[in-house]
Amino acid sequence: MTTEPTQDTTDGGTEAGLGADRDRLISTDIDAGDRATTPSETVVSSTDLSVYYGNEQALKDVDIEIPEHKVTAIIGPSGCGKSTFLRSINRMNDQIDSCRVEGSLGFHGKDVYDENVDPVALRRKIGMVFQKPNPFPKSIYDNVAYGLRIQGKDDEVDLDGAVEEALRSAALWDEVKDQLDSSGLDLSGGQQQRLCIARAIATDPEVVLMDEPASALDPVATSKIEDLIADLADDYTVVIVTHNMQQAARISDKTAVFLTGGKLVEFDDTNKIFENPEHQRVEDYITGKFG
Amino acid sequence: MSTDTIGDSLTESSGQLYRRLRERLFEGGLLVATVMGIAMLAVLLAYVTVDAFSLLDPEYGSWVDWQFLTNLPSRTPTEAGFLAPIVGSVFILIVMIFAVFPIGIGAAIFLEEYASDNRITQLIQINIANLAGVPSVVYGLLGLAVFVRGMGLPSGIVLVGGLTVGLLVLPIVMVSAQEALRSVPESRRQASYGMGASHWQTLKNVVLPEAMPGILTGAILALARAIGETAPLIMIGAATSVFSVPTGLFDTVTAMPLQIFNWHSRPQPEFRHGVVAAGVVTLLAVMLIMNAMAIYLRNRYESDEL
Image (cartoon, rainbow over all chains, first blue to last red; front, top):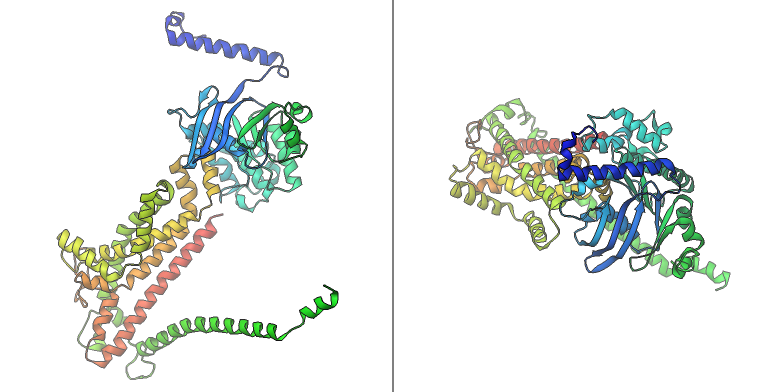
């Protein structure tokens, strides 16, 4: 921007551009100053978000602001709408014919349900890991390279390097580096799920959504995934749905508690939610009195 | 209940004996049903094989020989050949492959992957299932009405024959392709969409590679059914015996089952036994080869798929 000729600043568009740049500069300065105490920028925010499946309301007036580079856990009893909320962030609910969304869901302030938003482009910025490991019946290498290939980035980037980096980030490289050509389906369940995480982060999205990623895994595999999630938060904004409250307490910075009826009852720092929640119902849920 | 009575209840009473007998009888009945089907096939195969290779009258020698496979029809049984119908059947299959597979597989992809589940698609779905059960002679009439009367094509030519039999197997190709597509787990599609793949990319990279063995198997089995069809070809005016080998789409054609039918109505016993049996054996051999190909292709794709 600084290289632009100064006479162009009379143009309205450029002025707005400059303003935005200045904001970015300022926030970068603060980040550099003291990251820990600075509130992170909001990446995903919703206002009065309601989601219906046919006549049934799955989410009711959800307001939330999910911060950047933090792990946000979404907990709540079965059927409370936590997965629905997660899937409405990257518009995976579009796949369901009867699904209808009201209110707004912002990604960096842009409503993702605007008519001019392309859900395919959105999902390239917001990766997803599913409840059950779902690698493709392709080689480990092709699984990780899938996203880069479909996004047409395989010519721009060093594909081998990107695959290795993603597998390293997913803590899987050392286990599979000698068998990249063998099928992703030959791996154990826990390895498959880490492969799916590697696949999701290989394209370098901003946000990684995880829908109960460890619920189908044994305790050892689960703890590996949990360690991994904590590491991921350095580079990505992680939103994780879990039915396991201890897991939420262990790995998340922020926790959102959904209770029956698709309502977000409380959203705060994880410590606050687990030690001193505002709502009696949240405390009852966390202490196991219901749900 | 004391331990004594529990123990007693485990020993066999007459009621339990009766139950076991009933179970044996049921199992035996099922076995008979199974054996019956296979026995019939074995009798048929034995019958035609004996006749075709003249196992009981050594004076004739085998009816299935090189001359039988390369000669044109003849009034003399020993000189009668099967070449024209073999080539005719192959031409009909080729027309079908190009006409039916793109339409059938395309329709299946649309119905499974694109169409939303509403009244209209349900209606189409039911109709396809019903079409698969319509008698073949009705398809013959349809082919006659559309291709010969409607489009003014000559009757009894390769093109009309292929298209008519194609109509007949179209629903079969569609239904089997739909089943193959449906068998691809939804989670794989979700994974692909979640990566930011478009509908087409998901189809091309994930769904079709996984569904392909199933689609191919269904298609080849449909071809194997088509090669045995007789009635629709009679309806469109195909000759039962053709004295020249077809070389193009507009040549008159006959097919293997038609020629067999023709031979069977000849007065000489050599035609009705030896030559007919040789034709049947050849037809069955071609069908067997096609089914084997279907199995081979399916297995190869399945092992390719890591």
